[in-house]
Image 1 (cartoon, rainbow, N blue to C red):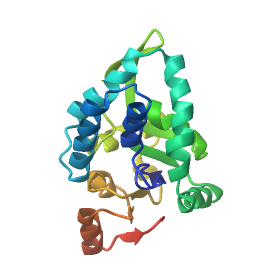
Image 2 (image 1 turned 120 degrees about the vertical axis):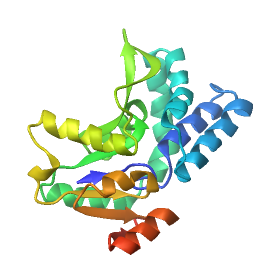
Image 3 (image 1 turned 90 degrees about the vertical axis):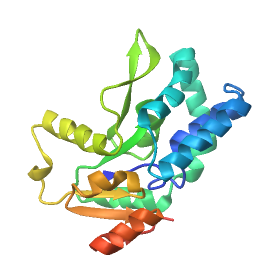
Length: 217
């Protein structure tokens, strides 16, 4: 069972909220970063995001501060920005699949520093996210490996399964829950795609193809 995170299990976008949190803390200049943050978010929703340009924007601040300070900020970020937007129906959906013995993973384009604690909060042991290069305990501001975005989600999923001696075909059924048109490549790759409170493009595609459409609001 595969679950997108932002606007699926959460009623918001953790990438966007992390940048907003840093702006509110005075870490990032509001005048410059708020408009850029919104611009990238709008591009993502429209399916036009250049993931490498965005990662340059999103990861650069992580390279400026020691990990201990970043972790303290993340604790406050979880309390202020993330816990209030965790969907209780999302928690219930996760619990139901886990209780059935399904292998569950969150697969998200948002970087692993931001999403790791969120996955733990949700009780999910397996997280496939965009990885960040780290040297001597500090982030470099560069992504490591293939970003977990669009077709990159399929690549990262295959790598993860291969490390376990498995493939997607090892399972009698494969599910993916997502809200976004950006996840169409992976939704088309599984046997049971599920559109969750989908954007207009995904909703139209799901209805045309007979996919399940649900709400976790």
